[in-house]
Structure formats: C-alpha cells, structure tokens
Image 1 (spheres, rainbow over the protein chains, first blue to last red):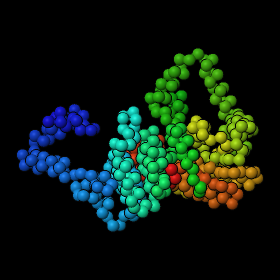
Image 2 (image 1 turned 90 degrees about the vertical axis):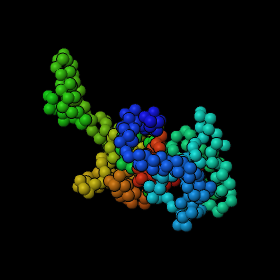
Image 3 (image 1 turned 45 degrees about the vertical axis):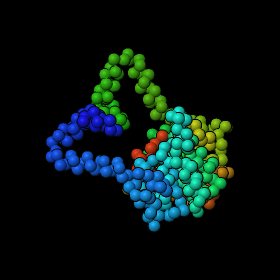
Image 4 (image 1 turned 135 degrees about the vertical axis):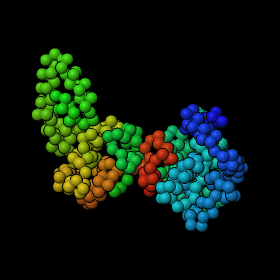
Length: 188
Length: 188
C-alpha cells in the first residue's frame, strides 16, 4: 500500500506512510466507499467531445453552458490550466484542451495533440478569436506559432501577455521576462 | 560596530557579527582605504542633472553615451530598476529616474518625485516615446496613469507588459496576473 501511495505526484515515503497508517485505522466501510469512488470516477470520467476537457458526460459543463461566449476559444495545454483560468474569472468563452505542448525533445509532435480537432472545430463554426494560453517556454512558443499559422487563415489568433507578474519588483524579475515586458509594451 | 552593520538592509545580527570580526582581523591600512572609499563615494556621487540616475559627474554615463537613442525615454522608480533594465540589454534609449512611486498612504505625492522635471524635459526635446517601467502594483498603476495624463499631449506613452513571467506555469500564477495576461493579449 505504501509503495502505491509513493507513486502519486508530490507524495514522498513519509507522507505515503502516514496515509497508509490512516487507511489502516478507518472502518472497512469507508475504505470500500473510497475504492468504489476511485473506480467509478476512473470509469466515468472521459474527455468532452468538443473541447477535450475532463467530464463524465458527452460534453463538459463549460461547453453546454448557454452563458458562455461561443465565438471565442481559449487554447490550453491541459485541464489544470483550464481550471487556473476559470479561477481567474476573466474569460467567458469556450476552451480547447490540446493535451500537451509540441516538444521534439520528448518526441511530442502536433499529431499527438488535439490540434487537428481544433482546426476542424474552428473551420466549421463562426469564431471571432482564438486565444492561445500556453506557458511562456520554448515548447509553449513553438506550439503557439504552429497553431497560429494553421488558424490565422480562419480567424484572429492572439496569445496571452508575457511580462511582469502582479506585485513583482523590476529588480528581481529575470532578464528575459523584462525584455519580453519591454517588447510587449502597450499604449497607456 | 556591530550595531552599525545591523542597520544595513538584509543584514541581521549574526552577519553583522561576522562582518565586524572580519574587520578586526584586517590590517589597519585596509580599513583606512575602505573608510576613505566610503566617504569619497558618499561625497562624489550625486544625481545626473538630466535623468536623476546616480553619477559622480554632472551627467550620467547613459545620458552622455552617443550610441543611446535620445528620442525614447524609459521612466523608472529608482536606480535599481534602471540597473535591472540595463542587465536585460533590451532597451537602448535614455532614462528618467523619478525617485519613487505616488503613494497617498505614505504621503508621497507627485511633487516629491521627479515628475515636473520629466514633463519639462519632454516638452523641450523631440521625444518619440515614453515607456513607463513601473512595478505592477496600486502605486505603480497610479503613477503610470498620472504621468500618462501629463505626457500624452506631447508624445506617445506606453507601459511595459504585465503578464506571465518566462518559464511560469499557468497553474501556479496568481489570478490577477492571469486576468491581466488575458486582458493584455496580443496578436500572434
């Protein structure tokens, strides 16, 4: 049991031990409920057929929400990034979860990502804007460029701003971020 | 001596003690040279008459450098921010060091900062662009807005981008930064 817990991300040997001892102290009923919940979730949760977000339905709760703006799609690498954007409560459109970033070093080419489905989706519907919300890194930039080239014939493609995070001091920001913040300056 | 060292920023009692013991071990000649260097620097270093950067001359080495673009001025809060931008090697224009940020909470009004001298400087010379490089905070935004209003009649006023720092993960970036990164998105 401890070995199983240790395989989880961010759980070391000591936490694994603590979790295992906690399990041993529980009544058997709780453990059965927990095991069933795990199996049920694993069995039921799949990908939204439209945006590839995680969902237990055919389409996810964002895609079926009539209050979301269906003419803007935000492209994210994975579901965690989608959740981060939802927490920021700024974006009111739909998403497309491509499932990773193009990375030749790790043999991840565009064919392994949900990019073809994105192009199809955009070509089939009336879209005002595609916002690329990918991490500022070599892989993120490569993926943004690749998708940008594919989609700009259909619609406007933008990417989120790279620059100074809120509350940061110029003095402690790395040089590349500062250079990008200067490049990306906007009219006051 | 230890008490004196403790007054320096970032130096606690233990470091102060270590520094003081180091001083005691030095030959007297070294201590005299050190003391003189301190007094000389304190005596000679003043503010550049044009940009208010620190300098031992009348004008600082950036203002007198003929290779800098004299038609772009970057506005920074203090000399440390100027040095950070110089390290990024992206900006090739001149600076104006206003000496702080507007902060009503700390009774710092615009009259305590080098803003009047900036307006005079801009109104007297041919300037293509003013870049505001102030920290992304309430004080930074207030100061940017204030200077923007004063200078936009004369020239184009921009501010550096707020957004995701390089190498950051969307998941770990705070909500306000994410919201600003979305707002400030740019065409790919």
